[in-house]
Image (cartoon, rainbow, N blue to C red; front, side):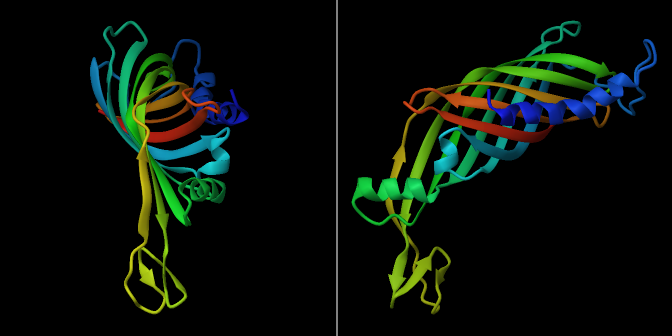
Length: 230
């Protein structure tokens, strides 16, 4: 596992570990709210996805959005099952645009990569007080990826983009190609922190290391997500 995910894990663990050290004997740290048991919870999440491995050369980091639910069958067992759907978007970097230009035999000025799919993970909770807990995640999922390659227009020698041209002439860029890979399997593992913010809701932040092994070089991503559970 890369140094990035280890550093992220340390950042996530520190805020929740500090209250645990402040406990006096068996007394919990005084939180304003309690993480009460609910068998089914819904989560809304979003954040930033960091590209890892070979993807650093080809894709910028990009935003992510997600929606899911968590099922914890038994109140006394700190094991839950979590389902998350996620959408991500990345802008392409020059080396990938150059490869696309050579492949399509034409100029490629910009491009984007979109990913959407879902994960099924096991979540193991570690309470650090009545109002906070750490958790570990692990599982897999399936994601589709759509790559779009575009060519900027030129009017009277001026470059135009989606917003128009410098001389005021309105002209959009043209699509060179759009390729969808189809659903691909990925595996992931991560760590997170959850803190109660009301009698029912909680705030969480987590980071996962996602790996797609369907290609020769592999594709690695680290989604960092902030969210609310109800």
